[in-house]
Length: 144
Image 1 (cartoon, rainbow, N blue to C red):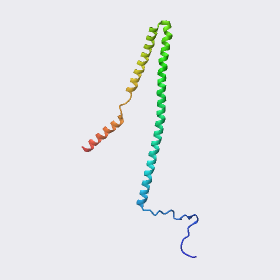
Image 2: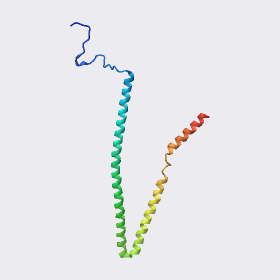
Image 3: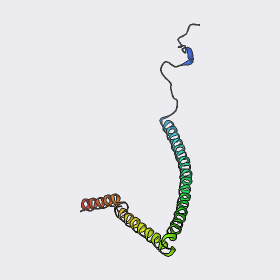
Image 4: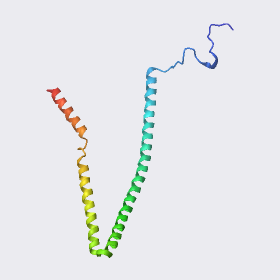
């Protein structure tokens, strides 16, 4: 057969590259749809990761709360032990008073340090509030 038709190269590849018969609107629509699917999948993945992280954090918080309760019970038992140990030497009333005063001093020091730390926290959303004030001032000056 002798003809002017070009033969397809081995492997079926077109030498001029792939040709898409779709219109520009169809291509854009396809890309938009694929992008939307990708975004939905990423959001679903983020939700799944956040859920897993929240479960792990919940377990950690529960264990820390349990440790706090156990530590509190330990301090109560230790305080009772100190009262009993000192009570044999100086009397139970005095030993209970001494242990109580020691705990009162510890509580006062911790409360004072806690207040000091909390005073160092800036007001909520300080930078956002400042930025909004600047934006409002800019708009006011622009409209004047």
